[in-house]
Amino acid sequence: EAQVTQNPRYLITVTGKKLTVTCSQNMNHEYMSWYRQDPGLGLRQIYYSMNVEVTDKGDVPEGYKVSRKEKRNFPLILESPSPNQTSLYFCASYSGGLVNEQFFGPGTRLTVL
Amino acid sequence: LAKTTQPISMDSYEGQEVNITCSHNNIATNDYITWYQQFPSQGPRFIIQGYKTKVTNEVASLFIPADRKSSTLSLPRVSLSDTAVYYCLVDPDTGRRALTFGSGTRLQVQP
Image (cartoon, rainbow over the protein chains, first blue to last red):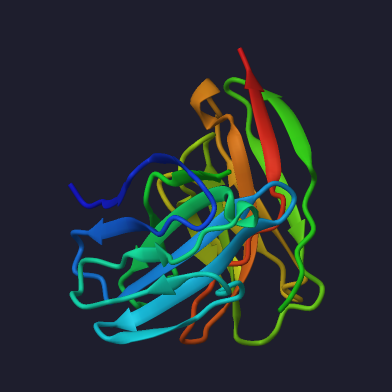
């Protein structure tokens, strides 16, 4: 089954404790992206990657890092989480074709205390 | 980036056709119109994308007038499982392909 998986699905942590949210897709998509969803603000892109070893900032990259060492994986790293990073995070992938059909993961709900 | 405006919420009954209209007055020549659906605690799911006139797939139809300043998503014969938030997006055909989601339209389907 074609899918995007994220782990963990839920995470409660404390300020300053480094964490990684993993994302993996099995569709051989070149393009992957991270979004965060906050009430009243919609989904905002954090980082994206157009291929292995190619990453770039989205609209809200501050406080986040990413890496793309393999095509299927695109982890999101919070080196020193802060309470304003409490949010619902989604990873997405897409093939790069004309139709921008992005496949989203199930989401990771992060709470930073 | 072109801003979209759509109704905050809509109500319908099972079996009815639902039309959700979105306005995007500042749409650019290269922009596509894309609709996504999102259920609570799930990631958005692509429904349909179009550039002009009419596009139909197995789930929905998308009507775009000649001036492209608005679009209408049509869901035929909705069921309870269509209760969700529907987002209209203007998608610039650029490399970043970032999706900018607004507040969407919350559709409630009643039995």
